[in-house]
Amino acid sequence: MKLIHCSDIHLDAVMSGLKDSNKAEERRNEILLTFVRMVRYAAKNNVKAILIVGDLFDSIRINPTTLDIVEKCIIGNPSIDFYYTAGNHEKEAFLAAMEDLPRNLKTFEDTKTYRYDEGITISSVSDPSELDLLPSDFNIVLYHGTIRPNAWAHRNIDYLALGHFHELREGSLGSRGRFCYSGCLEGRGFDECGEKGFVRLNIENGILEPVFMQASKRTIHEIRIDVSEAEGTGDADLLISEEIRTNGIPSDDLIKIVLTGVAKNEINTGFLSKKYEEDFYAVHIVDDTSVADMTDSDAEFDISLKGEFIRLVMDKDWTEDEKKAVIEMGTAALGGKSIL
Ligand SMILES: [Mn+2]
Image 1 (cartoon, helix red, strand yellow):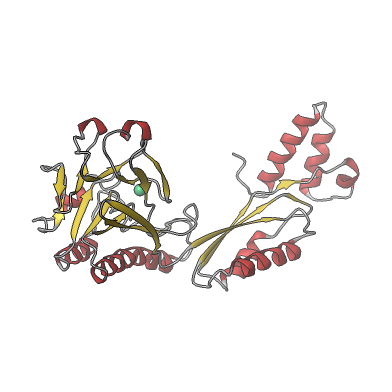
Image 2 (cartoon, helix red, strand yellow; image 1 turned 180 degrees about the horizontal axis):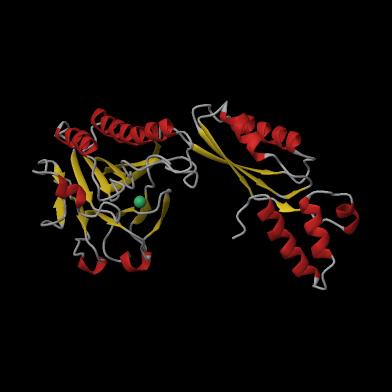
């Protein structure tokens, strides 16, 4: 029997960090499209059940158009059982928004455990102590939230399908079974980088074969560039280009560029983000560099406000550590960086 485990789709979420409002709207539709594409994949590959482990929608305000598409997707695929448990984002709003629940949409309101002929069971509980699973069955359990694996071990669970964290995480549950967070289908902000998708589960003769399937329309890549050796913006630009080339990042994707190390000179991140925005769907530059230790002689020749500030601090009767901390905070603030 084939199943799909997905979660945290966050339909109708607004992508954070996109300056272009058309693209933000486009990303909203792409999340929905990726969900539809996943269901199409399931239908083509004889997947018997899709486990949706919470946060299907981003909030309790369910957009009627989006709901209509999701509902039609479920009704239009009667051979697939859709198992759904609510997440902390949409809560009961998704089920409440539908007049009649589609016949193949299985919830855990009245029934805690569903059973297939092959001895495969699908359950969802709010607390592991509610479980009463037979050791002879292949038991799948759905749960949205953070877990202590020990609390779910030794309860005859073979696969604990989890939702809540937006990246793939997995581990073992005692001597029997595994837990897994499938992560979301699409990154919804520059804090959700890396491959996103669902987990395909193949169960044959009681043996589980899970495979992570990359599904997102676009990937948000994070590249970290140490600019310590760069003299300035031009050198930083070369380092970024090289890293992008090495990683073979497609132009349809998004990139978060994190600048690290000790900058010798100020890097013009505004220019760099403009430049790379011409080549990629969206770019976000994070300046995580620390300030070079400016000595008195360096500061003497620096006529900027930054130089003036550093001279002022160096003249203070403070410890070296205090001076360093104040200079770092002050120059960060002068550069418009967050000092928290
Ligand atoms: Mn979520």
